[in-house]
Image 1 (cartoon, helix red, strand yellow):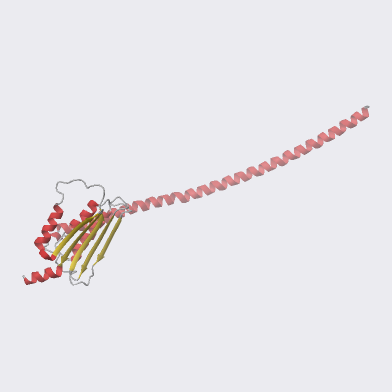
Image 2 (tube, rainbow, N blue to C red; image 1 turned 135 degrees about the horizontal axis):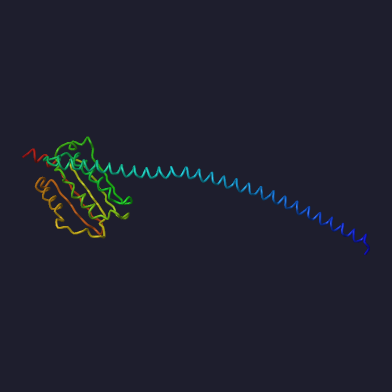
Length: 249
């Protein structure tokens, strides 16, 4: 191969090499541009995510604070509500119970306050039903013919013997005044756990029976029945008959 051929080959090689280098440089330039664009895109996405995160955090913190505040407010209200009911119960025990007799309205209000106080210690899932069937227009509603605290034993026993932390347990209370007869009906599911033994256990029941007999005689009755895991107690006081007998006496 002569010198001319060699020179031509070298020129061709140099040209091809130059083209390859130019292509590589162009590719590298485009790659850098693309990488730069991707980097900018990533930065923008990161900034957007950061902005969104800050927005979420700024929204979340007040929301959590609001929930905590509502919880505190709820407990504060429950505490105030309980203390208010307790004050009413204490007033009734200290003052109204000293009267010889109270009205069905006064005894029922005391009973409702007592139930509300006991509701504080029961599970939120506990089934507690209270129904009142009394009319303001009933002729005996405002007549002082009820012995004060005569209803307390049935309510205390229901909360004492029911499993108040079980969602499967229940207490049903019906307070009624109809045709001159006051009645209190309490049904509860008896807890499988036996109550703690007390030396003075049963005194409330015994006292109630004695008071009913001494005050109302045949005009009052109390029924207590347990069937399987349910306990039924019903107090009835025939106020009309009792008033008639008192007038005759």
